[in-house]
Image (cartoon, rainbow, N blue to C red; front, side):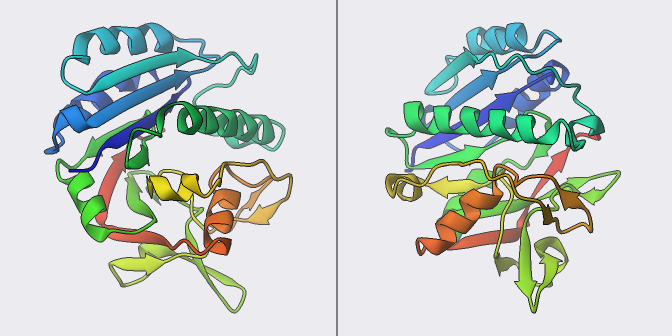
Length: 244
């Protein structure tokens, strides 16, 4: 069976972490093949202390749980303000550093990395098995949200200059032209020396808005496609996001 690295950036989401671990524990996959890495940065709640507590509480269940703290001196509330123009670029830069830190320090001994948002609310038990069975280089699930219906504006198919969000395409597997970051990715993608990079360029997202720089998944998905890797959205893997 394949070894899975679960990468979780954490910032001001301490109140969600116990539930998230309950979801990971409920996965019907061999937990001794799962390594969890939590990277906390600049929280003004007790996120780091909760990460350490969960590490001690559940380290016997998984292959390993690693907790690190990165200080960016960047303070941000966990609400919609984090998408504001003057905050968004630094937020993305810090996420890029966090993701590359996890890849460079923990991926070597694993077959896949799965980027999990710290505020995911419901993850179905068969999720990892479904990802592996689809057998794609990069695959992103459908993430639902009570307020916005779907949480992902970044994963799209582009036809004649028009962007179509994959969640609204009546197919299970949808080959994408761009993807967000909460993906399940084969290690050989990173073995090709692809990493997350910052691009200061505005673009229209798939929800009719404008992003003020490339999100952490945007350039990564472009680089994957340009290097011959296939990027897919999948509609039969559904993850529920908390209403924030």
